[in-house]
Image (cartoon, rainbow, N blue to C red; front, side, top):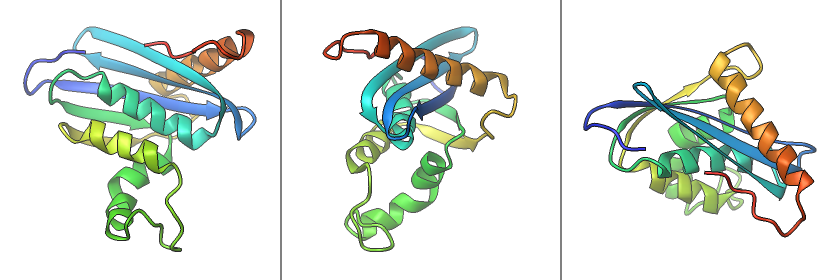
Length: 160
């Protein structure tokens, strides 16, 4: 999605899994002015957290130039990881506070790389609490997961 320099892009993301771990879906809606883009995808074996990270990474990777972004997520894992925890992880060579390797390292790397050119405000919203855009991305993520489950196992399911 292209934007004018200095323009604000709003992004809503969601990811989910049923069961967790198990089949999962992710989705994002990007809005710049009146323009909107929906993205979604799914994986057969994944976790809620991996789908949340994938949604954010895919949405930010879709931006064609540096933007001001408001990214809305119902994932405290994503929001806290990107705004609070990752600096400690980097300082500890990608180890968490307990000294264990950070889970989902490759996806955190992807999110950080995708976020780097942008000025992002990470906004947490309560999930399943009536926020219309959060409900929309939840529905898109669920639909992506369900569509994938109807396809043969070797079929790719990313929808961008």
